[in-house]
Length: 288
Image 1 (cartoon, rainbow, N blue to C red):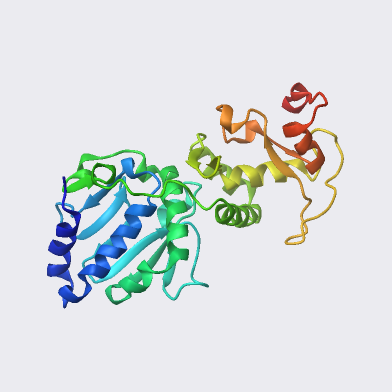
Image 2 (cartoon, one colour):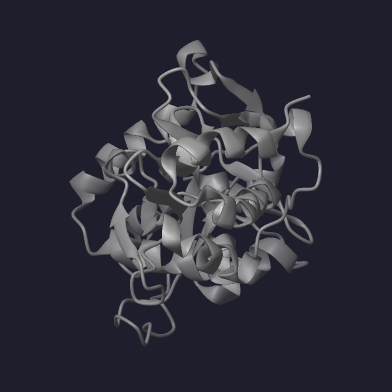
């Protein structure tokens, strides 16, 4: 079994000045990452053969990395530049995959602060699930794995659940942003994105859905409920758009796709009826 602390010692002794004084801080940094990686069986830790970083990665995507120039990169699911004192930029390769992810860039001197920032780790945890949508994470290439060890092989104390409320807030922001874009742009991303939703555990099963599918379904509805035919009962306070809710015809929990073809916009009453009503909900009418 890998001695992960020794791996960190080997790295920082070569790359970090006064490494003896910060080694425990680096231990804490990677411990936080290990604990909060939702899919440890898919993540790899160590120093690659190129020796250009010490990292935890999923496929070829960094989840957390300490690189040669003294920078630390952490993957998060949204722009946190307004709430953390570090540079935050979008992961360019994520833009076209239908899943926006962001890098937080800090320096070695900030290691302890980052380790103690719970907000960062909450968003890191969500990102460690969402990154599975990225094409770069879909294959475990031998070149990526060389010199590294699978996280689940040596670390068992991880947090498999995500903060559902936090995830939903981020998701709503993404939907709002997606709706401001052109339909053609959304459809390009939808075509590239996986139709299989990412399943994670909270107190119950939830899914990391595609915000572009929601935005496109709402736009196509023109504000009219697909079941009762009535206009949305009110407009959103945030952007004055008609308030409808997106419903999956075949539930995701039953293997339904996260796709436009499997989604309809319903008014709140009809949506509740679809899930909880005793009246006959004519699913064939919805499919038409």
